[in-house]
Image 1: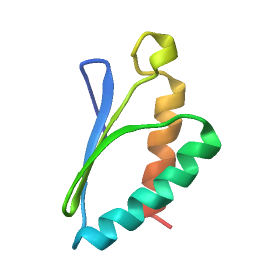
Image 2: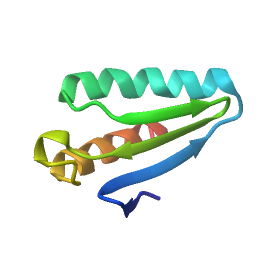
Image 3: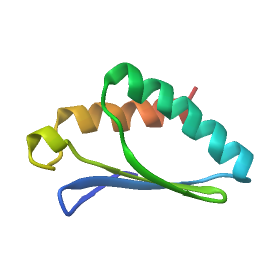
Length: 78
């Protein structure tokens, strides 16, 4: 689940291996580009961690972040 802390929506996803994690990141990148809302994220082997906030709104959580989080979740439910 996504948590809101320090003016960011955060979540870590764990996959079977690096290839699966990287494939997920690729799908997220395509969605983020279409939304023109790019996440702060890290990848270490099979883990992908997101920290979402809207820089134009003073680095706070906005509806854009919640929409991106929902879109990220939908990738896993597809």
